[in-house]
Length: 400
Image (cartoon, rainbow, N blue to C red):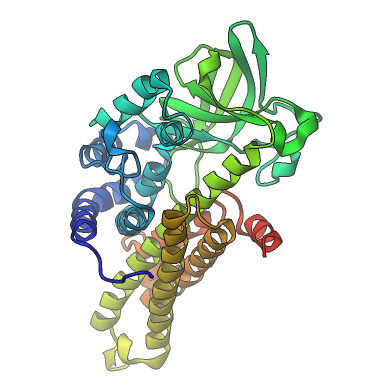
């Protein structure tokens, strides 16, 4: 059974995350969020400094095995850290959730491939400057969340992989929603090898970002999570060696696909809880200081109701996510429908309640002098990240 008493290790790393988030991430994210040009934000020393400090503290390698220099934390502990970091810097945290995609999958799928370990895992774990970053190249411009269309030969610029005498050639375009797309040193690329096999015709490939033919578009200019770098990635006759095929197409590919979204969607859920906490804690403080009608607004029943409801949402969403993480811990990768349901619930609650916390602030809530309007904007993206809630709900329902 789940124990609600944190271990000493959990308490220590969450406290480290809280201090780092409060002192470093939050002030930096606020500044970067206000920069009109996203490219200016991502190339700034402020952005680079936070990434470097996050890597110094090891937040990039929490799930990686100790034998390679990782922290090897379990899914529950990692989730607790993502919530805490998400409370202070959801944009930075969303990027950190994805930054270990390539090394994590190498240790999971190819632990005996010393070439890949030496090239992508060990340098990542040793990195203290935030330079080794994974991009997760899955969705495509004309496809979005509709995975059943990835293999439609009528779709322009779909990403394909063709074998030749030197390995594989990658061609195509990944959409502007590639997390870390513009700052990645290496990409995990899902590409179609055999369109006649549908989803099973996909393969997963490691593509270093500095190879000839790999380019990126302008970073996406978004209303929220503006500190999360997202950009299109283009592949034009990119040659990679045979060893960079991480997972082949065939009957086993759906297992890999489901494993990734099982774990990834828990991360989105934890960021949603962190975001709700940020809005709740600031609104609660404001409600006790702001006087209207001769008393603090916290004493007005409608305001108290809003605060109680977000408190309930935080607690229930966290418990749901903890169950998903517990299932991942006991039987990796866990239960897909539980992970999806927990993520959908958490992100829907975040959207609803961050908007309600804007109401608690009244007119001040829409002013950029207060951060609650930022939380409202950020929450909108969490319902779309790694698949829209509507699409994920259909997939989860199929597993009932």
